[in-house]
Length: 187
Image (cartoon, rainbow, N blue to C red; front, side, top):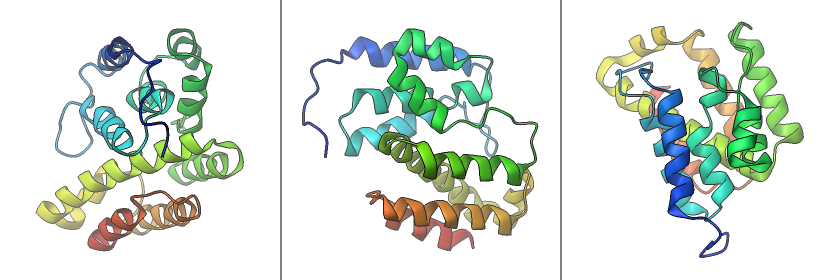
């Protein structure tokens, strides 16, 4: 576990990141259920804050979908929140949504296993945790019909999660058992 207390980070830094992300994600909704999108990065940051006291990791979690899903650039994130935060965000972002689903997921996986820092891997695992938790909730209500919201078949989605989870196991992500349990539910 990281240091118990990081006194270099003020509450204002978190607030600035939340404000920045909320503005960037304004009017965006989650794929399934239609909740305001900003709730997702806040939930991911909360999970990471429960396990790690790392300011850059938590700020990156709040901002992790900004580059992928809005016009905000990595350069903007770097200028406002620093290079370390921008690098973590970069490692978990799919920047070319025009590519086919399988190619995007392969590029993401390759980047994660080849050059991502441990904090990028932690963020990736927390992001997948919240996404899968949401999917599991809706799957219990609507069954396999939820997979119509995605650009891939159910089997491809599950295979992608399995590949990532095996990697997260190698990196000793603390909530890996919960990830496997949720995946078992929707299989």
